[in-house]
Length: 146
Image (cartoon, rainbow, N blue to C red; front, side, top):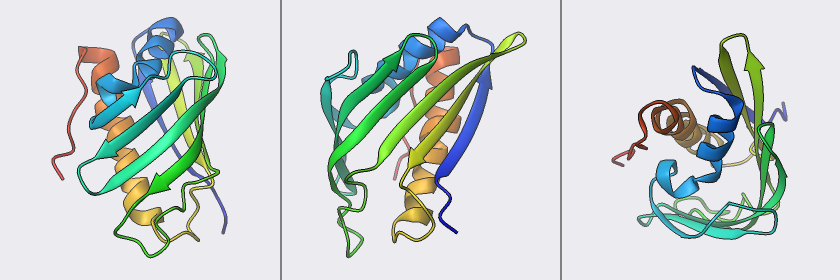
């Protein structure tokens, strides 16, 4: 099975509010972030303690509809192949659903075959379903407290 990791949330906010929240990566992907994700070509590096470090380039922004980051460097030292994220894409699809807005998150390339799948999909589950959602609704992202 080579299915990419996907999860979704629905919030009582407009697609524009959700789009702007996703681009404000420093506020919800809690850790040390250098750079930003505000425009196509923007580059940023995420680091969480000694557990994870990766660099992304923003490759697609469709206002109020889609955000895509391409992973250009990665180090997850607790796994023998610590650079498994390199070449993967982190995708946020934003869709109005009645009174709500749905965010479908896909990490293309994060599949069950790679070593970090369980840990990384669990991490994304926290960051999307809890931290990003809380930031969109309450204005504050959450720390996983690893």
